[in-house]
Image (cartoon, rainbow, N blue to C red; front, side):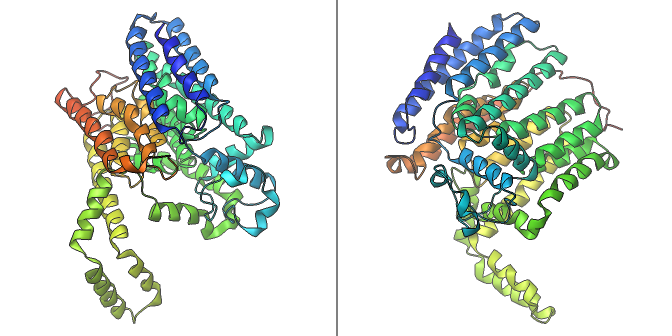
Length: 456
């Protein structure tokens, strides 16, 4: 019965039409769906422990996604960009060379072109994601086609998690925390986000670490980086456990998949650079760091420092670009990056559990990121079955509140000042409870590592 109630709430979301135009209705349906999900997760403890239980969880997960896959995406336009990138490649054009509004691509414009966001910026998605978009566009150049493909990848990710849980002697109830999570279902099946592709590579890398297959671990990590850039933060965790000489498969893969797009030159990172410098939405700690930098006002002092350095090099024009990095926004991003690097380094050295280290690093990335769209929670959510964190689970429940503050949300501006408090106070309280009760501790998770935590 609980899965049926969950399916009913998700079907309501599918039939609600433009969700950003009706944010109150969407949040109400999401709240009901999440409540039914929690009941279903508790009831899943009664599932048989063998293959039969896992099959039921995967089957229900597939049905839940099927309910939403035909619904028009209204919470995000990213799927239209994926479709565009695929069509551009099929037309023989490098997607990193031109933004969608470029006159050179005018002949490719169709009814979906208006829905593409940030038309002035070339694609930000890495090469493997681009090749996947090309493959899907070749088979079914439609929004529904892309959503079906991403749902299929998501089900494959669930199967990877099921295999990992079985290897650890865990039951199917833990798998429900990701497979039936309403945020995951909506963001993949309704909005068409491709986050499960990178997440599947991350889980594959983790599984390989746990069975001492270092080459497969680094190869899978390389695939994750080539799909979404964020898995780069996991590199120190891998380096702590895998000798540097075992990274050659990942380097070969990255080099091989960059070759088809090499004609773009520096344009390969142009879109990603714009994202890194400009994007800011639904952030937590970054906002406080930025306000602190603005209060200190270091811009003039930093410009003076740049001038002094330039004087040592004969006022080199190459160093003049450093002036653009002295404003509070760039200083705050640099400080945030340094703080993240420190946290990741500490976790990589001190945390012996690979899966817990992965989760801690990803959560730190999300807490410090200048941009935390609701679908970014899908980076960490696949680790919930392995480490059922209260804070992360609450975050998946409250992340849709961010849509109220979106410029596209109808009537959301009045709520904007309260959104960070409504979303993040319960999340931080959940993480505090995790810490108090033994942060994310779930017991033995697989083969014991060597004392150094490394795989030779």
